[in-house]
Amino acid sequence: MKKILIIEDDEATLELLGLICEEKAVEVALKSTLIDLAEIESMKPDLILLDHWMGSSRGGDLCLEIKQNQATQDIPVILISALNEIGQIALDNCADGCIMKPFNVEEIQEVIETYIG
Image 1: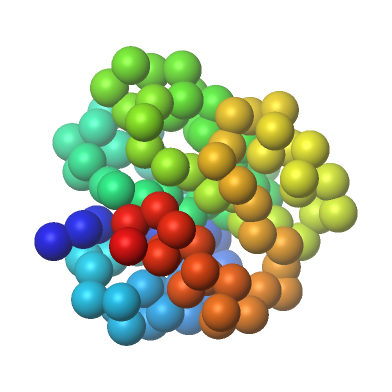
Image 2: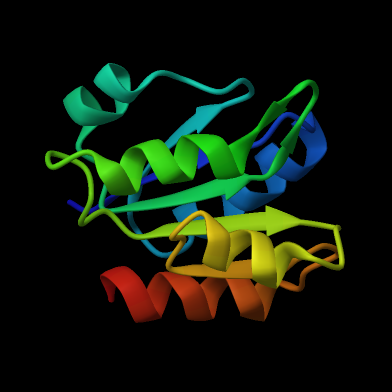
């Protein structure tokens, strides 16, 4: 079974993303804080949905770490943010794509279909 890791500090958004992903019959791991690279390596997700603005931390920084690590570099990472600059932030941090908040259900479903079928 395919696995999606969702990292989002807003509990309501985290829950919504989880519900959308579960409809696609995939395993979902929900995290409300940034996790370290070793944990991501051990989870082996097939897709990561990552909030960029995580309090004093930035999801983009974690994304760049993921993409610079040989064991995790092939995992698709989609940055999610309400920032108008999220497209550039995604490019700067080697993300595979981005989603602007507020998003709609179809956008999330399309990303899932694109990256894990």
